[in-house]
Image 1 (cartoon, protein in one colour):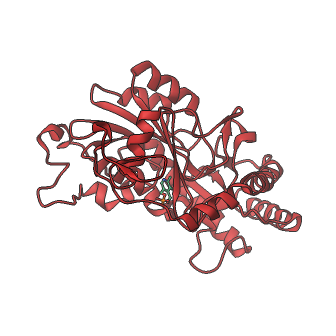
Image 2 (cartoon, helix red, strand yellow):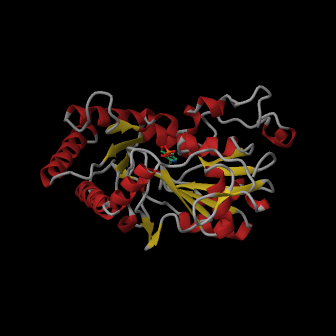
Length: 340
Ligand SMILES: Cc1ncc(COP(=O)(O)O)c(C=O)c1O
């Protein structure tokens, strides 16, 4: 992967998804999202071209979207499928775990994820050779032998590393957290779907489509509204009812407060920033095709609309029955006033 290659990335994601592509010298081709708030398979089909090397599917906000359809498309076109499961550890689609659909999957254990070790993460690979290359790159650029010593002997694993090793201590914490993952996600999923079900009859209050609710890991409830004005007034009123965290928290937000999760809010992308003086990778001759590519607002109508009319509420893993009742009562009260 490098200059001349494109990687398909959804317009609702996180900055890491873009920087992983750009630092390698490849160019991100943005793909719209659908009602699942994940990559839209139809838009992906329309954007795949002879330069597309890989698709980076991001399992956003806790649940996978149509990853099964995306996997069929990548297989048909013979391109790599990378799964970003940073926000969706413990989720699945019709019994198949998130992270098992593609060639490489990553998980994040950063502090506000489904499970955390403070920082760090995990990578999974289907192919042993690819795994060894990924392992070498995350480390010092070389494979390690069974004793953990660097082994520079094999040509395929003579690379350059990024020094992203996770510490033993963080690893131990991740193992302990992993044992709690089902409990954490079970509790968030249960609370979220109890709330959703009790709000399902409200006209004008829409919900993110989750193709398999049993596979939702549950950390966020995304709602949608018929206009930006209704969304804004609804969220303001919810906060006034106490559905919020401390000042400045992102517990209950309008989607336009979700910052760089939306493509056009990434200045480094929109301004095509570079790590080097020569403007690499944007200026590389093999990437000349990107000269007239723009990443500004307006590129992806599905993202733009959901940014303008969507809202997000974080679901804690420790909500009591009383908390759930309070949340439902607040939504119903606000809906009566704002949605009529
Ligand atoms: C979708 C997504 N991808 C990647 C990452 C990067 O994870 P980390 O911060 O552990 O590098 C995050 C979270 O930070 C994320 O939300």
